[in-house]
Length: 417
Image 1 (cartoon, helix red, strand yellow):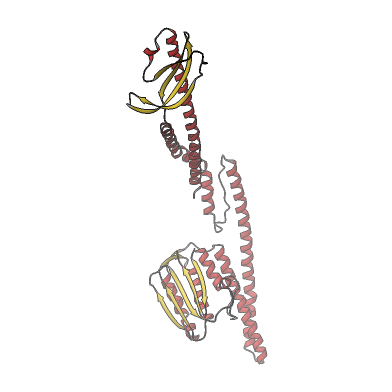
Image 2: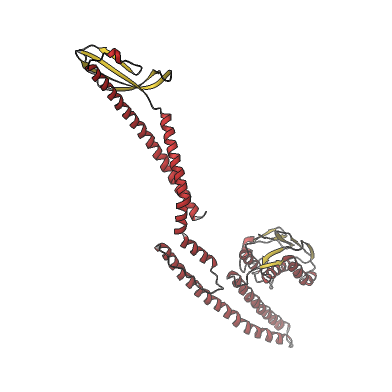
Protein backbone atom coordinates (compact mmCIF):
# COMPACT_ATOMS: atom_id res chain seq x y z
CA UNK A 1 0.00 0.00 0.00
CA UNK A 2 1.28 3.45 -0.88
CA UNK A 3 2.08 5.82 1.98
CA UNK A 4 -0.43 8.41 0.75
CA UNK A 5 -3.22 5.81 0.58
CA UNK A 6 -2.29 4.59 4.07
CA UNK A 7 -2.45 8.13 5.46
CA UNK A 8 -5.82 8.67 3.74
CA UNK A 9 -7.22 5.42 5.17
CA UNK A 10 -6.03 6.23 8.69
CA UNK A 11 -7.45 9.74 8.40
CA UNK A 12 -10.85 8.37 7.28
CA UNK A 13 -10.94 5.85 10.14
CA UNK A 14 -10.12 8.57 12.67
CA UNK A 15 -12.80 10.86 11.19
CA UNK A 16 -15.41 8.08 11.32
CA UNK A 17 -14.59 7.25 14.93
CA UNK A 18 -14.66 10.93 15.86
CA UNK A 19 -18.02 11.41 14.12
CA UNK A 20 -19.48 8.31 15.78
CA UNK A 21 -18.36 9.34 19.27
CA UNK A 22 -19.25 12.98 18.66
CA UNK A 23 -22.65 12.00 17.26
CA UNK A 24 -23.43 9.94 20.37
CA UNK A 25 -22.63 12.84 22.71
CA UNK A 26 -24.51 15.30 20.46
CA UNK A 27 -27.54 13.01 20.56
CA UNK A 28 -27.44 12.82 24.36
CA UNK A 29 -26.83 16.54 24.79
CA UNK A 30 -29.43 17.53 22.20
CA UNK A 31 -32.12 15.37 23.82
CA UNK A 32 -31.33 16.72 27.30
CA UNK A 33 -31.28 20.30 26.03
CA UNK A 34 -34.61 19.90 24.25
CA UNK A 35 -36.24 18.41 27.36
CA UNK A 36 -34.84 21.21 29.51
CA UNK A 37 -35.97 23.99 27.20
CA UNK A 38 -39.39 22.39 26.71
CA UNK A 39 -39.80 22.08 30.49
CA UNK A 40 -38.89 25.75 30.95
CA UNK A 41 -41.35 26.75 28.25
CA UNK A 42 -44.14 24.74 29.90
CA UNK A 43 -43.31 26.38 33.24
CA UNK A 44 -43.55 29.84 31.65
CA UNK A 45 -46.94 28.95 30.16
CA UNK A 46 -48.21 27.73 33.55
CA UNK A 47 -47.00 30.89 35.29
CA UNK A 48 -48.67 33.01 32.57
CA UNK A 49 -52.04 31.24 33.07
CA UNK A 50 -51.73 31.63 36.86
CA UNK A 51 -51.15 35.35 36.37
CA UNK A 52 -54.28 35.63 34.24
CA UNK A 53 -56.30 33.90 37.00
CA UNK A 54 -54.89 36.47 39.45
CA UNK A 55 -56.11 39.16 37.10
CA UNK A 56 -59.65 37.79 37.46
CA UNK A 57 -60.02 35.56 34.45
CA UNK A 58 -62.18 32.52 35.21
CA UNK A 59 -60.24 29.20 35.18
CA UNK A 60 -63.04 27.56 33.23
CA UNK A 61 -62.58 30.09 30.44
CA UNK A 62 -58.89 29.24 30.09
CA UNK A 63 -59.15 25.45 29.85
CA UNK A 64 -58.31 23.98 26.38
CA UNK A 65 -56.87 20.77 24.90
CA UNK A 66 -53.41 21.64 26.28
CA UNK A 67 -54.40 23.24 29.56
CA UNK A 68 -55.92 21.49 32.57
CA UNK A 69 -56.86 23.34 35.79
CA UNK A 70 -57.96 21.45 38.92
CA UNK A 71 -58.85 22.93 42.29
CA UNK A 72 -57.12 21.44 45.35
CA UNK A 73 -57.84 21.80 49.06
CA UNK A 74 -56.52 25.15 50.22
CA UNK A 75 -54.71 23.74 53.24
CA UNK A 76 -52.33 21.66 51.06
CA UNK A 77 -48.87 22.98 50.35
CA UNK A 78 -48.16 24.46 46.94
CA UNK A 79 -46.70 21.89 44.58
CA UNK A 80 -43.42 22.57 42.86
CA UNK A 81 -42.99 22.13 39.15
CA UNK A 82 -43.13 18.49 38.08
CA UNK A 83 -42.56 17.28 34.51
CA UNK A 84 -43.33 13.81 33.21
CA UNK A 85 -44.17 11.98 30.01
CA UNK A 86 -47.78 10.97 29.42
CA UNK A 87 -50.18 9.97 26.68
CA UNK A 88 -52.80 12.55 25.80
CA UNK A 89 -55.17 13.21 22.95
CA UNK A 90 -53.78 15.66 20.41
CA UNK A 91 -56.64 17.41 18.69
CA UNK A 92 -54.82 18.67 15.51
CA UNK A 93 -53.55 15.14 14.80
CA UNK A 94 -56.83 13.55 15.99
CA UNK A 95 -54.99 10.83 17.88
CA UNK A 96 -53.27 10.15 21.15
CA UNK A 97 -49.62 11.14 21.22
CA UNK A 98 -46.77 10.98 23.64
CA UNK A 99 -46.67 14.39 25.33
CA UNK A 100 -44.81 16.16 28.06
CA UNK A 101 -46.98 17.21 31.03
CA UNK A 102 -45.86 19.97 33.41
CA UNK A 103 -47.83 20.58 36.64
CA UNK A 104 -47.62 23.21 39.33
CA UNK A 105 -50.04 24.55 41.97
CA UNK A 106 -50.76 28.16 43.01
CA UNK A 107 -52.81 29.69 45.84
CA UNK A 108 -54.78 32.56 44.38
CA UNK A 109 -57.52 34.52 46.18
CA UNK A 110 -57.99 31.92 48.90
CA UNK A 111 -58.25 29.15 46.35
CA UNK A 112 -55.72 26.48 45.44
CA UNK A 113 -55.32 25.56 41.76
CA UNK A 114 -53.18 22.86 40.09
CA UNK A 115 -52.37 23.99 36.59
CA UNK A 116 -51.16 21.33 34.12
CA UNK A 117 -49.97 22.12 30.61
CA UNK A 118 -49.25 19.62 27.78
CA UNK A 119 -46.94 19.78 24.78
CA UNK A 120 -45.79 17.25 22.19
CA UNK A 121 -42.50 15.48 22.97
CA UNK A 122 -39.75 15.45 20.34
CA UNK A 123 -39.20 11.71 19.96
CA UNK A 124 -35.80 10.02 20.03
CA UNK A 125 -36.23 8.93 16.41
CA UNK A 126 -36.54 12.57 15.35
CA UNK A 127 -33.39 13.48 17.28
CA UNK A 128 -31.53 10.47 15.85
CA UNK A 129 -32.58 11.37 12.32
CA UNK A 130 -31.37 14.93 12.80
CA UNK A 131 -28.05 13.86 14.29
CA UNK A 132 -27.42 11.20 11.62
CA UNK A 133 -28.28 13.64 8.84
CA UNK A 134 -25.96 16.25 10.35
CA UNK A 135 -23.14 13.71 10.74
CA UNK A 136 -23.55 12.53 7.14
CA UNK A 137 -23.35 16.09 5.87
CA UNK A 138 -20.22 16.68 7.97
CA UNK A 139 -18.70 13.40 6.75
CA UNK A 140 -19.41 14.33 3.12
CA UNK A 141 -17.71 17.68 3.66
CA UNK A 142 -14.75 15.83 5.19
CA UNK A 143 -14.55 13.54 2.16
CA UNK A 144 -14.56 16.52 -0.20
CA UNK A 145 -11.87 18.16 1.90
CA UNK A 146 -9.89 14.94 1.93
CA UNK A 147 -10.10 14.52 -1.82
CA UNK A 148 -9.32 18.10 -2.74
CA UNK A 149 -7.06 19.41 0.00
CA UNK A 150 -5.68 16.62 2.17
CA UNK A 151 -4.44 14.38 -0.65
CA UNK A 152 -3.11 17.37 -2.58
CA UNK A 153 -1.32 18.78 0.46
CA UNK A 154 -0.04 15.35 1.51
CA UNK A 155 1.21 14.68 -2.00
CA UNK A 156 3.02 18.03 -1.97
CA UNK A 157 4.58 17.28 1.43
CA UNK A 158 5.66 13.77 0.36
CA UNK A 159 7.03 14.89 -3.02
CA UNK A 160 10.67 14.98 -1.78
CA UNK A 161 10.19 11.45 -0.44
CA UNK A 162 8.91 10.32 -3.87
CA UNK A 163 11.96 11.89 -5.51
CA UNK A 164 14.20 10.02 -3.06
CA UNK A 165 12.52 6.71 -3.92
CA UNK A 166 12.97 7.35 -7.64
CA UNK A 167 16.66 8.14 -7.15
CA UNK A 168 17.18 4.95 -5.11
CA UNK A 169 15.46 2.85 -7.80
CA UNK A 170 17.75 4.35 -10.46
CA UNK A 171 20.93 3.67 -8.45
CA UNK A 172 23.27 1.33 -10.29
CA UNK A 173 26.81 0.18 -9.58
CA UNK A 174 27.64 0.40 -13.28
CA UNK A 175 27.11 4.18 -13.39
CA UNK A 176 29.64 4.51 -10.54
CA UNK A 177 27.95 7.67 -9.27
CA UNK A 178 26.70 8.17 -5.69
CA UNK A 179 23.24 9.57 -5.09
CA UNK A 180 22.74 13.32 -4.72
CA UNK A 181 19.47 14.86 -3.52
CA UNK A 182 17.98 18.33 -3.56
CA UNK A 183 17.50 20.11 -0.25
CA UNK A 184 14.03 19.86 1.24
CA UNK A 185 12.18 22.14 3.61
CA UNK A 186 11.50 19.12 5.85
CA UNK A 187 14.43 18.29 8.11
CA UNK A 188 13.60 14.56 8.39
CA UNK A 189 13.82 14.17 4.60
CA UNK A 190 17.14 16.00 4.60
CA UNK A 191 18.49 13.62 7.25
CA UNK A 192 17.33 10.63 5.21
CA UNK A 193 18.91 11.99 2.02
CA UNK A 194 22.21 12.75 3.76
CA UNK A 195 22.36 9.22 5.12
CA UNK A 196 21.61 7.75 1.67
CA UNK A 197 24.33 9.88 0.08
CA UNK A 198 26.92 8.69 2.60
CA UNK A 199 25.74 5.10 2.27
CA UNK A 200 25.97 5.05 -1.56
CA UNK A 201 29.44 6.60 -1.45
CA UNK A 202 30.56 3.87 0.95
CA UNK A 203 28.88 1.15 -1.16
CA UNK A 204 30.59 2.33 -4.34
CA UNK A 205 33.97 2.53 -2.61
CA UNK A 206 33.62 -1.00 -1.20
CA UNK A 207 32.34 -2.28 -4.53
CA UNK A 208 35.33 -0.84 -6.42
CA UNK A 209 37.76 -2.32 -3.91
CA UNK A 210 36.18 -5.79 -4.04
CA UNK A 211 35.91 -5.65 -7.84
CA UNK A 212 39.57 -4.69 -8.22
CA UNK A 213 40.60 -7.38 -5.76
CA UNK A 214 38.64 -10.13 -7.54
CA UNK A 215 39.90 -9.00 -10.96
CA UNK A 216 43.48 -8.91 -9.71
CA UNK A 217 43.16 -12.36 -8.14
CA UNK A 218 41.63 -13.78 -11.32
CA UNK A 219 44.34 -12.25 -13.51
CA UNK A 220 47.24 -13.16 -11.24
CA UNK A 221 46.07 -16.77 -10.84
CA UNK A 222 45.59 -17.31 -14.56
CA UNK A 223 49.21 -16.54 -15.48
CA UNK A 224 51.00 -18.96 -13.13
CA UNK A 225 48.24 -21.56 -13.67
CA UNK A 226 48.85 -21.38 -17.43
CA UNK A 227 52.60 -21.77 -16.85
CA UNK A 228 51.98 -24.77 -14.60
CA UNK A 229 49.68 -26.34 -17.22
CA UNK A 230 52.30 -25.89 -19.92
CA UNK A 231 55.10 -27.43 -17.83
CA UNK A 232 52.88 -30.35 -16.79
CA UNK A 233 51.97 -31.00 -20.43
CA UNK A 234 55.67 -31.05 -21.31
CA UNK A 235 56.37 -33.47 -18.47
CA UNK A 236 53.60 -35.80 -19.66
CA UNK A 237 55.36 -36.04 -23.06
CA UNK A 238 58.55 -37.34 -21.41
CA UNK A 239 59.35 -40.89 -20.50
CA UNK A 240 58.45 -41.67 -16.89
CA UNK A 241 57.19 -44.35 -14.63
CA UNK A 242 53.48 -45.09 -14.25
CA UNK A 243 53.48 -43.60 -10.72
CA UNK A 244 55.11 -40.39 -11.95
CA UNK A 245 52.59 -40.15 -14.80
CA UNK A 246 49.73 -40.61 -12.36
CA UNK A 247 51.03 -37.85 -10.06
CA UNK A 248 51.62 -35.42 -12.93
CA UNK A 249 48.16 -36.09 -14.39
CA UNK A 250 46.60 -35.47 -10.94
CA UNK A 251 48.46 -32.16 -10.65
CA UNK A 252 47.32 -31.19 -14.16
CA UNK A 253 43.66 -32.00 -13.38
CA UNK A 254 43.72 -29.97 -10.17
CA UNK A 255 45.33 -27.05 -11.97
CA UNK A 256 42.53 -27.15 -14.55
CA UNK A 257 40.04 -27.29 -11.72
CA UNK A 258 41.52 -24.08 -10.31
CA UNK A 259 40.91 -22.50 -13.73
CA UNK A 260 37.26 -23.55 -13.68
CA UNK A 261 36.73 -22.34 -10.09
CA UNK A 262 38.22 -18.90 -10.86
CA UNK A 263 36.07 -18.51 -13.98
CA UNK A 264 32.92 -19.62 -12.15
CA UNK A 265 33.52 -17.34 -9.14
CA UNK A 266 34.23 -14.42 -11.45
CA UNK A 267 30.97 -15.11 -13.30
CA UNK A 268 29.02 -15.33 -10.02
CA UNK A 269 30.46 -11.99 -8.86
CA UNK A 270 29.44 -10.34 -12.13
CA UNK A 271 25.95 -11.78 -11.86
CA UNK A 272 25.51 -10.63 -8.27
CA UNK A 273 26.79 -7.13 -9.12
CA UNK A 274 24.66 -6.97 -12.30
CA UNK A 275 27.66 -6.09 -14.42
CA UNK A 276 26.16 -7.37 -17.67
CA UNK A 277 24.42 -5.22 -20.24
CA UNK A 278 20.63 -4.74 -19.97
CA UNK A 279 18.62 -7.78 -21.13
CA UNK A 280 17.08 -7.96 -24.59
CA UNK A 281 14.40 -10.11 -26.25
CA UNK A 282 15.99 -13.33 -27.53
CA UNK A 283 14.82 -16.59 -29.10
CA UNK A 284 15.44 -18.92 -26.16
CA UNK A 285 14.43 -21.98 -28.22
CA UNK A 286 17.20 -21.31 -30.74
CA UNK A 287 19.88 -20.93 -28.05
CA UNK A 288 18.73 -24.14 -26.33
CA UNK A 289 18.85 -26.12 -29.61
CA UNK A 290 22.32 -24.75 -30.39
CA UNK A 291 23.69 -25.81 -27.00
CA UNK A 292 22.13 -29.27 -27.32
CA UNK A 293 23.86 -29.67 -30.69
CA UNK A 294 27.21 -28.57 -29.22
CA UNK A 295 26.92 -31.16 -26.45
CA UNK A 296 25.57 -33.95 -28.65
CA UNK A 297 28.99 -35.57 -29.05
CA UNK A 298 29.47 -35.64 -25.27
CA UNK A 299 26.00 -37.16 -24.90
CA UNK A 300 26.93 -39.91 -27.39
CA UNK A 301 30.26 -40.59 -25.66
CA UNK A 302 28.41 -41.00 -22.36
CA UNK A 303 26.00 -43.41 -24.08
CA UNK A 304 22.99 -41.33 -23.03
CA UNK A 305 19.63 -41.23 -24.77
CA UNK A 306 18.26 -37.72 -25.35
CA UNK A 307 14.57 -36.84 -25.70
CA UNK A 308 13.53 -33.25 -26.46
CA UNK A 309 10.20 -31.39 -26.58
CA UNK A 310 11.11 -27.81 -27.47
CA UNK A 311 8.44 -25.32 -28.53
CA UNK A 312 9.73 -22.99 -31.28
CA UNK A 313 10.00 -19.22 -30.99
CA UNK A 314 9.94 -19.03 -27.20
CA UNK A 315 11.07 -15.46 -26.58
CA UNK A 316 12.16 -13.95 -23.29
CA UNK A 317 14.03 -10.95 -21.97
CA UNK A 318 17.53 -12.06 -20.91
CA UNK A 319 21.11 -11.34 -21.96
CA UNK A 320 22.10 -13.89 -24.67
CA UNK A 321 25.42 -14.75 -22.99
CA UNK A 322 23.67 -15.32 -19.64
CA UNK A 323 21.10 -17.56 -21.34
CA UNK A 324 23.89 -19.68 -22.84
CA UNK A 325 25.62 -19.97 -19.47
CA UNK A 326 22.39 -21.08 -17.77
CA UNK A 327 21.60 -23.69 -20.44
CA UNK A 328 25.22 -24.92 -20.56
CA UNK A 329 25.32 -25.43 -16.80
CA UNK A 330 21.98 -27.23 -16.70
CA UNK A 331 22.87 -29.56 -19.59
CA UNK A 332 26.38 -30.07 -18.22
CA UNK A 333 24.97 -31.14 -14.84
CA UNK A 334 22.51 -33.53 -16.51
CA UNK A 335 25.38 -35.16 -18.42
CA UNK A 336 28.06 -35.20 -15.70
CA UNK A 337 25.81 -36.51 -12.94
CA UNK A 338 24.14 -39.19 -15.07
CA UNK A 339 24.58 -42.95 -15.27
CA UNK A 340 26.32 -44.60 -18.18
CA UNK A 341 23.57 -45.62 -20.58
CA UNK A 342 21.09 -43.31 -18.84
CA UNK A 343 18.70 -40.76 -20.30
CA UNK A 344 17.94 -37.01 -20.46
CA UNK A 345 14.57 -35.38 -21.21
CA UNK A 346 14.33 -31.69 -22.09
CA UNK A 347 11.02 -29.82 -22.27
CA UNK A 348 10.66 -26.13 -23.14
CA UNK A 349 7.24 -24.46 -23.05
CA UNK A 350 6.01 -20.89 -22.98
CA UNK A 351 6.49 -20.52 -19.22
CA UNK A 352 8.82 -23.34 -18.23
CA UNK A 353 12.10 -25.14 -18.94
CA UNK A 354 12.28 -28.64 -17.44
CA UNK A 355 15.31 -30.94 -17.61
CA UNK A 356 14.99 -34.50 -16.26
CA UNK A 357 17.82 -37.00 -16.13
CA UNK A 358 18.63 -40.35 -14.64
CA UNK A 359 21.35 -40.59 -12.00
CA UNK A 360 22.32 -41.94 -8.64
CA UNK A 361 20.07 -41.09 -5.70
CA UNK A 362 21.43 -38.28 -3.53
CA UNK A 363 22.16 -38.29 0.20
CA UNK A 364 22.24 -34.52 0.81
CA UNK A 365 19.37 -32.08 1.18
CA UNK A 366 18.45 -30.95 -2.40
CA UNK A 367 18.38 -27.34 -1.22
CA UNK A 368 22.06 -27.55 -0.23
CA UNK A 369 23.14 -28.52 -3.75
CA UNK A 370 22.09 -25.08 -5.01
CA UNK A 371 24.62 -23.46 -2.67
CA UNK A 372 28.23 -22.81 -3.62
CA UNK A 373 30.71 -25.71 -3.54
CA UNK A 374 27.97 -28.17 -2.59
CA UNK A 375 27.97 -31.31 -4.73
CA UNK A 376 26.88 -34.92 -4.42
CA UNK A 377 29.22 -36.69 -6.83
CA UNK A 378 33.03 -36.94 -6.68
CA UNK A 379 33.42 -36.13 -10.37
CA UNK A 380 36.71 -34.14 -10.66
CA UNK A 381 35.20 -32.05 -13.46
CA UNK A 382 32.55 -30.71 -11.08
CA UNK A 383 33.47 -27.73 -8.89
CA UNK A 384 30.06 -27.46 -7.16
CA UNK A 385 29.13 -24.11 -8.70
CA UNK A 386 26.88 -25.09 -11.63
CA UNK A 387 23.52 -24.94 -9.86
CA UNK A 388 24.68 -21.96 -7.77
CA UNK A 389 25.32 -20.01 -11.00
CA UNK A 390 21.94 -21.03 -12.42
CA UNK A 391 20.24 -20.06 -9.16
CA UNK A 392 21.90 -16.62 -9.20
CA UNK A 393 20.82 -16.09 -12.83
CA UNK A 394 17.23 -16.94 -11.84
CA UNK A 395 17.38 -14.42 -8.96
CA UNK A 396 18.76 -11.72 -11.25
CA UNK A 397 16.05 -12.19 -13.89
CA UNK A 398 13.25 -13.04 -11.42
CA UNK A 399 12.85 -16.64 -12.60
CA UNK A 400 11.87 -19.40 -10.20
CA UNK A 401 14.21 -22.39 -9.96
CA UNK A 402 13.46 -25.72 -8.31
CA UNK A 403 15.53 -28.91 -8.07
CA UNK A 404 13.71 -32.07 -6.97
CA UNK A 405 15.41 -35.49 -7.04
CA UNK A 406 13.05 -38.44 -6.56
CA UNK A 407 14.92 -41.73 -6.33
CA UNK A 408 17.08 -42.04 -9.46
CA UNK A 409 15.24 -39.26 -11.34
CA UNK A 410 16.56 -35.68 -11.06
CA UNK A 411 14.33 -32.80 -12.20
CA UNK A 412 15.43 -29.19 -12.57
CA UNK A 413 12.66 -26.69 -13.42
CA UNK A 414 12.99 -23.02 -14.41
CA UNK A 415 9.71 -21.07 -14.41
CA UNK A 416 9.75 -17.84 -16.37
CA UNK A 417 7.77 -14.70 -15.60
